[in-house]
Image 1 (cartoon, rainbow, N blue to C red):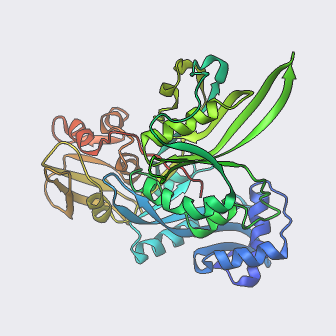
Image 2: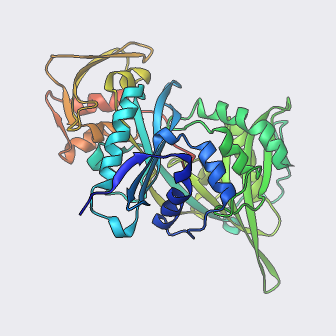
Image 3: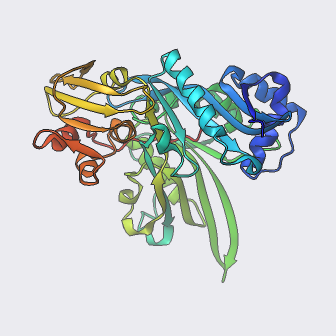
Length: 417
């Protein structure tokens, strides 16, 4: 049997590639000419791969340049992997592995310090050196039980919440998001096409768009500090009692006043008995804004953005650390050879760091996929050691690593990509 050919795309391949992608994700395989043309213009075809068997696309893979915010506020050049699929007729032939290997090698060559992705299935990506670096929680608030102030009529800090149009979101949203991601480890930049699809400026039959409600929070000076989009479904009047559910599509805030005001606005809407939060940070403050935090029930909780280091010294030197001046030697095992080695991490009183190759004895050794879990501050070296996934080579090395890598809030990636 001849192995399928793996190659990057020409514009003439895009329709067939999209059909394979849609089939892989169990979507209707209809591709309009308009969408094919637009996707060809959006995608970097040199970073878009397909596996072709007898002229037909049977596997898909794409990566995009992104900026990843790390603890301390610096941004790293990242390769964001997406649209990975293998048609059911061609599974277990190593197609995804071949495409992954090619993409990681090119990302390393381009100088992208990390690769990131959202794993559709947990067991797939650890073999390639990825580890879950951020998690999420999805909450549902039982509004009648939430014990919020029924007389709430707006922010008490001089700010205000206003419903706005998609055009106003297009104008104000990108600048607000850039402020939010600068202080949110795990966040990535949103390109122009993200905002076009969010505001309905671009629509495709494969991704139907219905205009949601948009609201912004403006501080006392009129600056937009928060944005929420949501939908509402009225389930009727059960026994003449209204029963409306609000589902949040996104909520971002540049500060606690904006965040609290937008949640209280949603919770105070007439007839609303349930607010579904959508994917939120794993330590989101929403429950604690309620008079009864138990009214916020966890609907789901899980891993979200996975990360793979490609340049360990660059990645480790980019973020800041806790615990004051420190010197710590990590031995990193990477079978693929991109990010492995022994490295001396030195930090100063401000948390700034340098990272250089070293021949000194290691304090802690671990696989590159486990270092990925630690990198943004979400995992515990002590826990990894207890699981046998990290090894201490001096007493209390795992505890010292936890002091270094810990962050005050858990990292969060608000966006699917």
